[in-house]
Length: 115
Figure 1 (cartoon, rainbow, N blue to C red):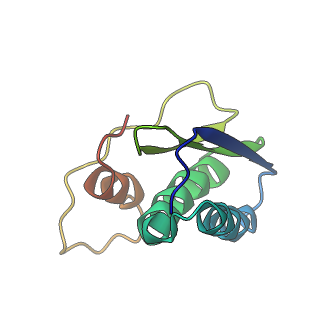
Figure 2 (figure 1 turned 45 degrees about the horizontal axis):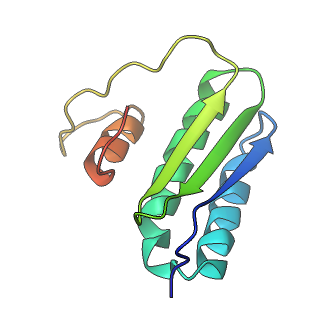
């Protein structure tokens, strides 16, 4: 049964691609321990996209923040050292030759609210 109390965790990581799976696994463990296993697949996808953008497009450290509210809302956020916000995602199309640029479109498609 999910917690009725609100909680928050922050995971600070270095600018290292290995930080992405560390964040995913840590998030899965936290959600499992709080009885929220049903949220892990989508939450891991969102966290991986946010953290990988922070690691890929900046040179400083990053952080993943997870917050659960009493109203049953899980909020994920990523922080990085770059003072400028990421560009809004382009419309996602299945037919593309590009290997990048899909992450924020996935976040927009999978998150209830983003920004």
